Image 1: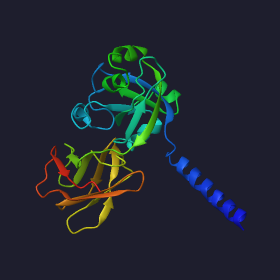
Image 2: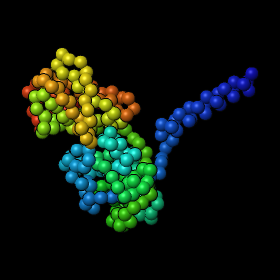
Image 3: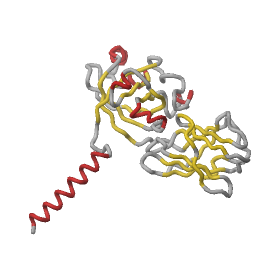
Image 4: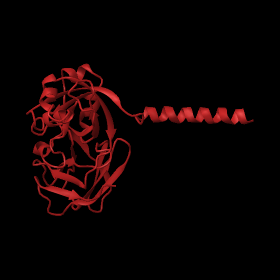
Length: 251
């Protein structure tokens, strides 16, 4: 009886281990890394997620990365946070740094490898030992290890796109804590039901109403893990294109 119970326990433990491994809880994975833009800058201005100059400012602070297809995910990987470290070169510190996906890397080594980080010059240099940042950047293309980690922001920002009008709303969504990325976005007008928004590009989501939008409006975010976040009445009455509205809700 005891041996039978142990066999059942072992089988269950094996199933749980396989489940954890399939969800990436096994620790570090291998990838490649390059860098782009200014040597100590934030990559390009904004990038394919639409964050524009925010990539240089806190909380991103130029610690960002463009991602190959497996990281960028046609824009749905925008905002995800990763720890990256390197030990493949004498200049590597082996200490992890945290970066955020803010851009797409569409070619070259980003397509040649299953997972590739095209880091900002600042982030790439941060992988190095003190005083070795330029030496590591001069190498240019290195092997790294990475791990998906929760993002730790304070509140969510919704920047209303300049092309929005009384019948059409598009918002750039930034600083979602936890998973950081977005799988689905929904809109609720005053007194209405939840309706799906469409991904326009990057981290920009849109809704064509066909009639005048009724504010205030709430936005519900669903991340890749299924976690939901509701920013109640975040788009106020009298909202304006080009303005940014914030919600302290992050749960």
